[in-house]
Amino acid sequence: MQRILAAALFVFGVGTAQGATISWAKWKQDTLGLSGTASGIIELQSGRVRIHYKGEVQPPSRMGFGRPEWVPHSTFIGGVVSNQPRRGDQVSFYGGAGKGTNVITFSRPVTNPIIAVYSLGDGGVRATLNFNKVSLSFESGGPTKRHRGGAITIENGNIVVGQEGNGTVQVNGTVSRISFTAPVYEKFCSITVGLPE
Image 1 (cartoon, rainbow, N blue to C red):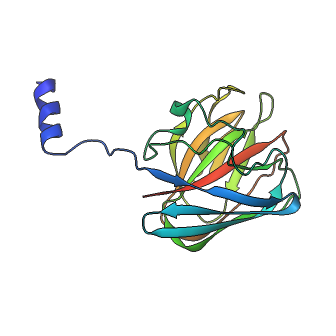
Image 2: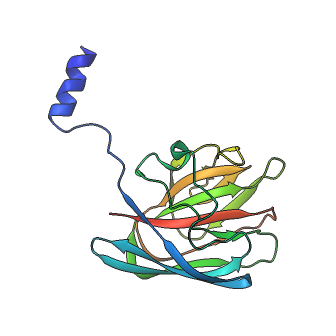
């Protein structure tokens, strides 16, 4: 009976949604510091979206080939996400009290952007990314090849939590900007942003 039901679901196109191809940000330049900046582009079939980040930017932020590797794939692929970020593209920060708000701005409104998170917190530190006025959905999570750890989680619908946490979340709805704080100091956390095609 289960085989018949599965075959029927396949034939009629009913079942779980397949992950979307995500166009990840290609970060082009950054300025380090507590009032740092980073900018880049996201190439979509519908046209280019410029992305700008303002807030804390620290080493090991990298624009292009390098670390993090965003592997294993199973940590950064799942839910609506079918492909992991480009190796090396990231914006990194340390967080901590009084560091202010980090703001991601898009050149035009975008729908359901994806945020990939690498190394939020560490083995002895539970850290959070507290997003403002948005609703988040968990998409994927798990260890990384380099630092291991586990999956990020979401609390209260808008707080990403990790203790050496990694994975992806979706910002639900259409937005022009996303802002968050990182109130707990740690060695570093990296993020990048992508848009579904």
